[in-house]
Amino acid sequence: MFPMKKIIIVLACFPVFLTSCTSSTESKNNETTNDTSKISTATPAPLREKVLTAEEQKALTPDMVIQSLKDGNKRFMSNNVTARDHSAMVRSASTGQYPKAVILSCLDSRVPVEDVFDKGIGDIFVARVAGNFANTDILGSMEFGCKVSGAKVILVLGHESCGAIKAAIDNVKLGNITGMLKNIQPAVQESQDFNGEKKSSNSAFVEYVAKNNVLNTIETIRQKSPILKEMEDKGEIKIIGAYYNLQTGEVVFL
Image 1 (cartoon, one colour):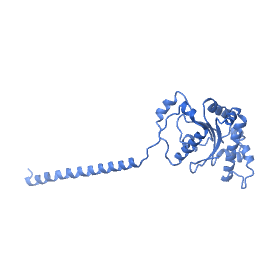
Image 2 (cartoon, helix red, strand yellow):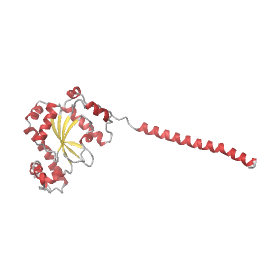
Image 3 (cartoon, rainbow, N blue to C red):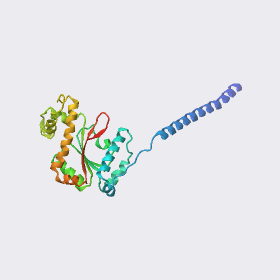
Image 4 (cartoon, rainbow, N blue to C red):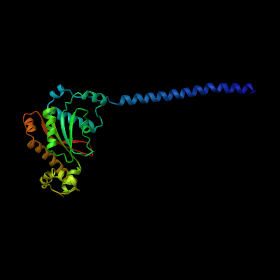
């Protein structure tokens, strides 16, 4: 049998140990609660967006849509993008679509079009082809987007360091790429007034050609689609161009 004195000492210490553990745990919990409180207080309330309705689309003007694209790009650059319930938006959009704009972009994976303009499901039509040029299929798609589905803006979006532009400058010959690049060659020819080295290794020249290619595509749309040209002349749509900076995420409207 243990001496009584030792038993009393052990029992006397045990409550102290429990109290110490409880205090330490409560202290940590309080610290965690305080930290969480600080985080939630510092986080700004996100924007929320629903799928556009026919009435909302009809009320838009081309200038309102352009401003919406500009504002969305600012949010993208500042990492303050709109919070969206994608599951709910998928269900809402299943009965119809009423997009704001048609955007013709390059194939480049570094240009995530919806993200760049902070747009969600049902907001924009996106056509993509290396070098963002307009052929018959894309023109038909644009006519569908604007004349049939009510979009108010056509935006041709070029970008920095475009591989298709570089290939056109180098006059690359490779399979179907050869034929594709013929659509970009006019921009290369029209850029011969560039004051500097006219090579694909010169980023300034590549940018110059890319921007001329955007402007050429806009003119192609007007010349080869009487439907879209008429809509633009009536002020029903605007056909514009822009250039995306891969370094900053900024879209500069031309």
